[in-house]
Image (cartoon, rainbow, N blue to C red; front, side, top):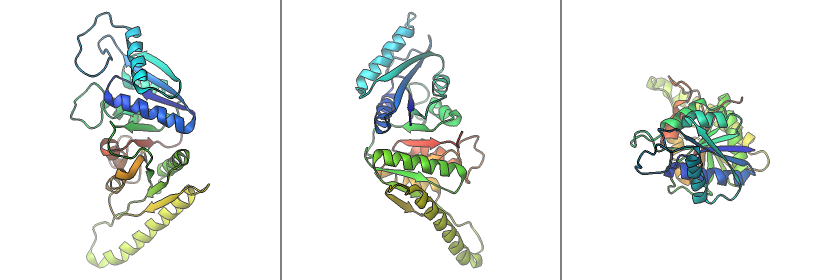
Length: 279
């Protein structure tokens, strides 16, 4: 990983994302670019209501960005980018060649009741690189395990490799989850089918564990008979990071994100990285 781009808008969520991006860069020796988008009608200065300032301009926006950087106390130099435009557009443009885009789960705008902001949602759906969604700090351990979901799809294989590299960089264990379920069938067919499905699921998980363990990485497998999102949420309490692919075999009616990645992006208590298919 060489370049991380993070969105800043003055919100507590964005400040958390900025701090997380700098820490992530420390793990990899990567460069960090902080992006603040502004417009004359959208004056990014922080939380709380503030009077409209008709003289607000790029230097004011740059001051807001520098204030955010000062609040975080970055351990490494951070490139500053102030863009006149919509936040999602700015992030996607500046991050077009990034290795990782980082967004807070909620920004200053929108409806406070939503779990994921519109900017975060759009970046997740359109970014060509992995996207990290970071929430205001909770009880998850900063040095906890990395958890990744696999389902045998090409995208989940890319996510597995990304998660393994991340676990090595953090020097923590990688927990690999393959959730499987039994379809509703006639009782007479269930016993034999359950055994077949479990055997197939175990084979897939063992293959993933062998691939991830290359280089001596500590790995642990989980084979719950549950929905994928619920299975991963059950492990979120001890995780410092969760990783999923954009799409799996369970996708139904989603434009880009699979149902599992969408649910985790909205509900995971720890940071989550959504990894797209290889470019």
